[in-house]
Structures are given as C-alpha cells and as structure tokens.
Length: 166
Ligand SMILES: [Zn+2]
Ligand SMILES: [Zn+2]
Image (cartoon, rainbow, N blue to C red):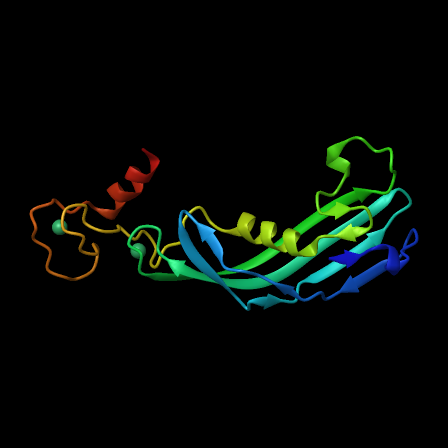
C-alpha cells in the first residue's frame, strides 16, 4: 500500500517511486508459475492534474512454470506497462474515472502489479513455439526426434494449432 496523502501531490506535481512489491506465485489453470524476481521494484509514475491523478506502472518480470500442452518447464519474459487515471472529485460516479486500486488515499500497488502481470501473460505459456503437446494415447512428448509408434497418428503441428481453435 502506498499512502497518496503523505505525498502531498498538487496539480502539476510529478513523482517517481520505486515501491518494493512481493509477488506470490501465480496459479493458472491449476498449475503454479513462479515470478522472478519474487520482489519486484516497479517504476511508478504519478502525475497530479487539477481534477485527478495519472498513474503509470512499468516493470519486467520472468514467469516460469509448466508448458500448457506438455507440462515441461517453460518460461517467459514480460515487459509490463499499465496506466490508470483517478479522479480526485469525491462525487465522481463514472467508474472509468476511478482507479480500481485506490481506496481513500491508499494505492494498492501490490494488487495492481499482480493484475497487470496476469493481464500481460500470453494465452498460453509454451516450452517451445507450436509445442504439439503429448500423445493422447501413450503420453510421449510429440514433435521431438524420439521414436513414437504407439499407433496414434502424429498430427502435424499446423493441425495442432488448428485444434486449439476448436
Ligand atoms: Zn510443451
Ligand atoms: Zn503415442
């Protein structure tokens, strides 16, 4: 949590902060993904205007966990950017003009970092591009130069891709 009141931001004021934010592993589709570093130091820019506050968040993180298709270790580097606007008018009723992460004078930067990180993730985390996954019959990892002869026809990765759309 960051106390915005203690910053005494007046119209036109700009602040750059480097809060320390601990990030617990993410659970996606029942699997655990670790975030490195576990303690992020996002760049947080605050700019006060006459009627509100502009907030910008930026950080890099590495997310690691099982491939969505074959469960082998996979990792992805993310550059996360997020921006918010918060009206300082207490009577503002438009939710678009209220930042979800500000309650009173408190900015919940931890929740914002986590949401921005999850939002930046691709649909699938794969150990190799177009990973064809496992054979549905014998469980062997497909697409590698391993002998595979359980009888299940091996799909071309182009077809595996198509299968995702179905
Ligand atoms: Zn895979
Ligand atoms: Zn097989």
